[in-house]
Length: 208
Ligand code: XMP
Image (cartoon, rainbow, N blue to C red; front, side):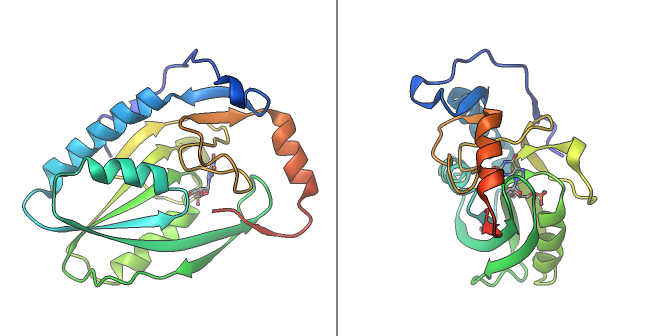
């Protein structure tokens, strides 16, 4: 576990005017994200120095975090993606389906698995054994956010950006019904937004 995993003090940061109708509060500001991602990259660099690493990232929620993290890693690396979809309505997680398999050979390699958020642990508890079966020399896990209070599977990450309370968050890659990934901060939506979509979703939808 990353020693520096940042415990959040409540930010009083105002919601940018364009988002006020939908976003209730900012949990992590863009400046806090930028600072923490840089320091995570420094921790990872220290641990992986000397060998080429393979970064394996889970689609789609990691895209913003991943792009910022790897541009601060001054190491030789190769990048690949695993697609995982959770078919569930609104904020409830559903059945996991792999939508893209890894292309690179990771046997004997130093692998860093990057995900957006470790919540119940159901996703990583499926993905980690799948990767281990490919016999990497080393496998460490990096998540931007960790919600330890929601865990139902025994999974821990080696590098954690922020520990957050049990609230459904959006932004910086994280979505609600495929929206809000482009927020430059991590925030919480007004309850009416969650209600509208949860009620209008009649069929299972793709969430990741
Ligand atoms: P689990 O429960 O399997 O969670 O650890 C894994 C995936 O579920 C999604 N997730 C969220 N997405 N806000 C989101 O936008 C949240 O608060 C949240 N919690 C879980 C996410 O795709 C994550 O990788």
